[in-house]
Length: 286
Image (tube, rainbow, N blue to C red):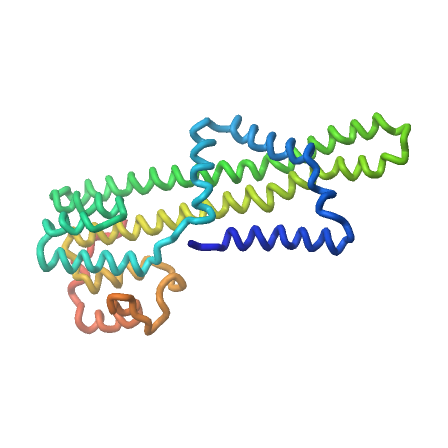
């Protein structure tokens, strides 16, 4: 679990609470039911109106992932694929069918089963790319929904303020109540801006980032699976996959993975001396 979203939201609302306290005010001054009902209720309503029921339900089904979503380290994916390449070179591609039974990732499991079944490399690439595109589109729809709510909320807050100010104008005959009434009117704008920038937009950004990371992981798996099918040498395959990953997401230089796999720098040096002439085994990148 990556706690970045939870920590960020807690700190953001903590900063708001600190400001209210330092100003000598009270939290109850902004916890007014009427503007909150309008801002949150109308924002969700127009978000629903701007899409389909499926978009609405799918977005909230994906919401727990924004807080509990796990990301697989790229090195773990590389180690797994390299292990499969060693199995394929030692026992043949048919052995991957048995390996697929022990794989929890449905995307990789499907790729291994297709390889064992003798699916053509080009056809397998098309199949996997289509699956990646569909997964990316589904995940990004949820992010788009919450980002859309972040766009609606401030305007709805202004609507609430305008409605409240019309009520203020109806009571100009009682000057003593104008101050509190005007302050109350602007609470709607506050909640519009607050909900957009403290809730909806961060959730949309988080879901989009998770969607991008998932696409990166699936692309890594796809390239690795296709290389395994082509009979690539495991060490060179590991180097190629590491070259596809930003350096900051890989173990530090000199570190080793759980299975003793060397990092990109160390492996590249040895591959230069021992693996010349074997790079042609790798399939071309998409």
